[in-house]
Length: 309
Image 1 (tube, helix red, strand yellow):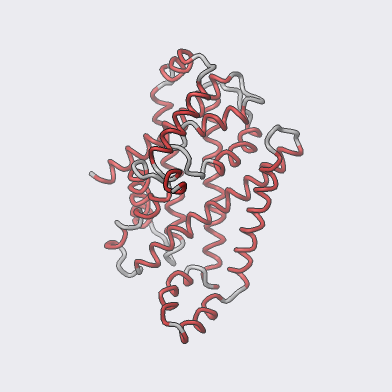
Image 2 (tube, helix red, strand yellow):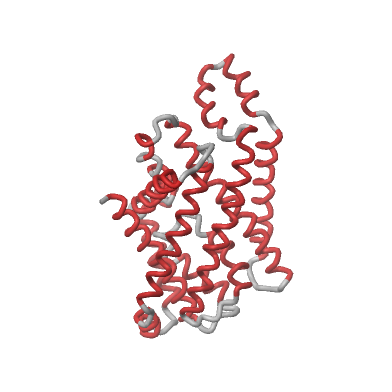
């Protein structure tokens, strides 16, 4: 019962509303509104295009897992699928819902790829991107401790344990013959044959692809994080490059928890918690945070609509 309540849209709307109230209750809302109003339209368009570029890079990473050679058309198809997933993800109770459906339009395009393999590639791609964020978050927490930035100490240990778990996973993938082990079980229990397409993504022949995808993840996360610094400069918020690279991976990992609608409320509260140490004012922090949230929604809407029509 508790799990059902926490996972419901009503609960997430309520959490978002409460967090938004506490984040904005002590700031000048008129200043924030004027800050948004004064943003030149060209900067809005440039930020939308910038975010779209990050989506394209992520789609290239996803297609890289499935094909020996990735061409322009494949990247276009996978980008369309990613945009469609983001669009529908706005209307589902969890962000995972976007992953559950974004592979569907690719079935007819690529009938040579089994449904199980295509579906599994979505989650392997997500895990690779997530693992890059875990490494970045642990590196950020470590650097933050060394430079005496103020953030909860338990986050350092949490991200350290998560990093260790990810390292164990990659060690197993690169050292254990999962296909050979599965073949032994297939001979005895036929139901394991359905796992063959999933394991094929992790076979020894795909190790090079996994490494490439992990490197692509680091590049895309670097580009995405840098955008927050660009937006900060746009609003004269006073974020330093160093602070953005220390705090944002930590914030992004916490926002993975499905506790709010599109991250609104939770993102603003976390930005205030971390960036208040160095920013010009709380109004400036909330300008950056809310702009990034709205930008994500606009990209999902525009990308989804463009894909649909």
